[in-house]
Image (cartoon, rainbow, N blue to C red; front, side, top):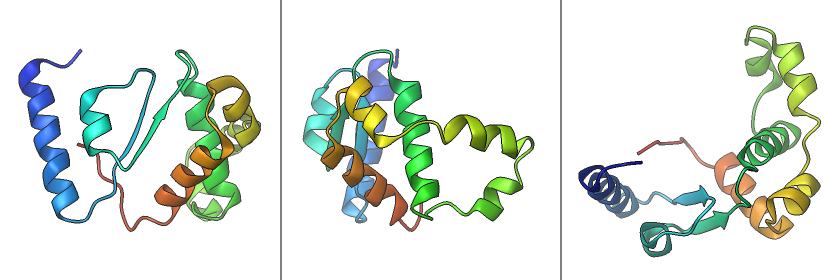
Length: 120
């Protein structure tokens, strides 16, 4: 759990990133005020479904050619990775994570079309 000073620091980083034109996606299992105030898109997942969400997101990014298969092939054990991850679909996100397909697609497109990704 982040301390109060870490939370303030994260909020400050998000504000500065937004001023520079960043679009912020918040994915979590519980809504918080920082996300409500600063995120462009907020997804609230069913608790314990983060694994399904991230694997489905990865699958969608690969299938829509936002992530190069050549890049993935450079990973150690890439065949196992692809075999495991590609089982996850957007319909699983809808059913298990309780996120609509429209919300999920918006996140996939925002990430896929971004020039770069930042972590706070």
